[in-house]
Structure formats: C-alpha cells, structure tokens
Length: 262
Image 1 (cartoon, rainbow, N blue to C red):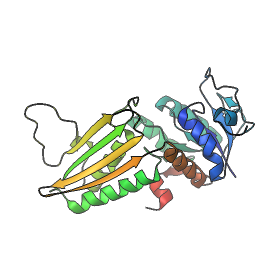
Image 2 (tube, helix red, strand yellow):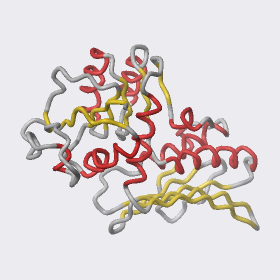
Image 3 (tube, rainbow, N blue to C red):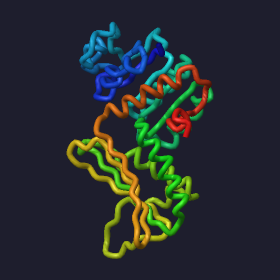
Image 4 (cartoon, helix red, strand yellow):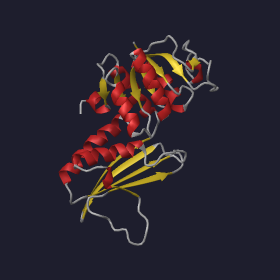
C-alpha cells in the first residue's frame, strides 16, 4: 500500500481524507495539525469516526517518511511542507488555494527534486470541465461572450474561488488571453460589456458545496457548462486517487489532467 501523510487532520477535509484513504489502498502513517490544536495526540482514526489507526495526530512528521503528503492548508502551511518534503524526498499533492506567484515559483523549484501535483480543485469532473470549456472557447471564437459564475457556502473566505480562476485560466489560455481580460462583477450606470472580456461572478449562499458554470453566448443562442459538487467527499476522493497515482513518479510538476490523460 502507498503510505501517506495528511495535513490539517483535525479539519473537515483532513478527517474525510483519513476516513476514505483505505478505499484507495492508501495507508495513513502520519496525521498533522498545527501545534496546540485540540486534535494533537488523538488517534487519527478515532478522530474521524473510523477504527483506530494507531497513528496519533502530531505537529511534526518526525522520523516518519510517507511516500506522499496531501496538503490542504494555507499558503504559509504549504510553504513549510514544501521545505520538509524536499528534505525528505516526499511527493506532495497540494490542494491549497490562494497561493501567490511567489508560492508557485517555490512549487516549481521544489518540483525539480520531488513529484508535486497541485490542483485548484481535486474533483475529477471539474478538471474535465476545464478541458471541455477550453475547447468550447477555442471552437466558438471571439463572437461569443464568456461569463463564469461560481457559488460556495457563506463561510468561504476567498473570491472568486480557486476553481473559478482555474476555469478562467483554461479558457484564457485556449483563446490567447491573460487575466487582464477578467472583469470581476459589474456595477455602475455605464458599464457595457466590452469585446473580449471574461466576466467573473461569485455567490456566497448557505451551505453550497460548489457550483461552477461557464456561459458562452452569442446573439440568438447560449451554451452553458456546469459542474455541481454535492459532497466534499468528491474532493477527498480525487486527492486520494492523485496520491496513489503520484507515488513513485519522477520529480516534476503534475496536474489532475496528467493523471486522467487529457
């Protein structure tokens, strides 16, 4: 079995990763949390409602060397884990969003030493959406207006979502544009749509897990591509599948598209 470590073990995503790991033939050998967290010292399995795993939640990897570490944390947490994994030759699956250009530069540098897979969304369906939306944008051409609408739960901090930006990036790359073409919402008395712009709109409503729609519209017709997540387990399963796929890979920067062969 592939051995893995999971950061944020006391959080919702961390607990689901631990609970579901066995379904992907993965063995959790380390469960990490920040120092002082209430989960420190607890058995990782008991913490997430399954049989005890004999792995206590800790703030350090110590002498444990998993094949892959799954990181859904903060930019600062990801930077710290990058250094640790590089030093230990541990592959990384990174689901952290809100990363800066400097953070991605660090990831690229680390990928010269270890295999790293980063994705703004670990859902396999979302990553297929990225591919399809890019192809649609390329085929329809400049006569079609493009708008992206995303919705998440009321507690989400960042907007637009990392997934929406990933969707936009795929569309922009396929049409030869940069993020300068993005327009974040509209407000005012005289803000007509400009040729070539891509609209971005964020909704924060109730307990919405994740909804992303790309609109392609001309005068007389509209094409809509939508992905709706109904359970956070979708993201956990994608990350765990990525961890199993990444184990043993050569150093380099990978994406879910590489795993899917698209």
